[in-house]
Image 1 (cartoon, one colour):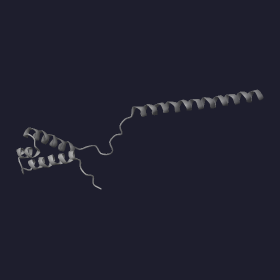
Image 2 (image 1 turned 135 degrees about the vertical axis):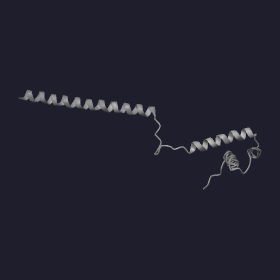
Image 3 (image 1 turned 180 degrees about the vertical axis):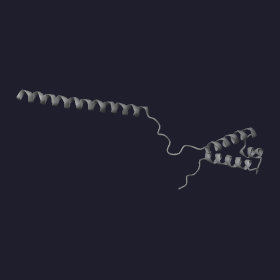
Length: 111
């Protein structure tokens, strides 16, 4: 179901339509300004902003998804998790070596 445009959006659409009419030569900037209830100077400021936005919207952009924003807290936790996993591996290896040494010592006593 279509959403009802807000009054601000309706006003923006009206401005855009009048700018297009002026650019097509259908009306003058003075006429557009009068219909909008603003000075020609204000109309020209809006026109300049609208045309700049149009040009900006037509610039090529890199394909694909935009990069995921960095989350410093998440990166810190990931680094901390990696360090703890590395420490756990070292401790597991140390324990395995100690158990092997204890078994070796027991087997020498029994021999």
